[in-house]
Image 1 (spheres, helix red, strand yellow):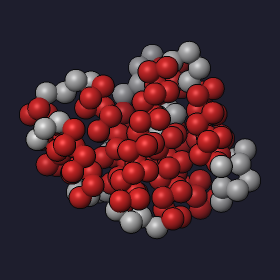
Image 2 (cartoon, one colour):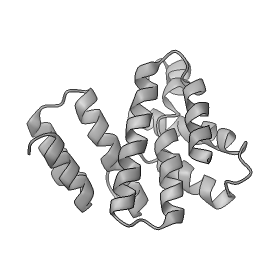
Image 3 (spheres, helix red, strand yellow):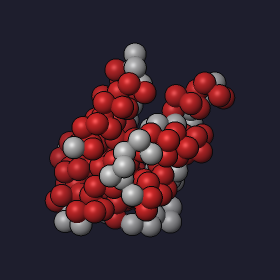
Length: 163
């Protein structure tokens, strides 16, 4: 299955950085669960799964190129690396690659969200970031109220953080 192969490729890409590897695994699992529970069509779920696995592919190149890796730099640097990695998989269509790269290029952009797959990726990434960054309850509530829209994402954030 392609997702298994992508997990291996992304683990190799982030070799020596278990925190980053575990981050994308958690985002992938949350995105997958939300996508299933929100009845995302199979094709959209396939794209979402691949985008979730690869969403932070721009971090390491940003650190190497600029010495930092803020969200905008990740969005800028990630799609080129994702496109190159995805080109190794003949079963991934050009349309899928384009959408995955779009999602990677916008995964820190919270306005003008186009598509349920995009919304779910934002929600899944935040579920993990909020815990990893030990955000306070007020910050979590503020983000939830501005970004979260899916019933499953709302249930997960409220349940996880006792909101």
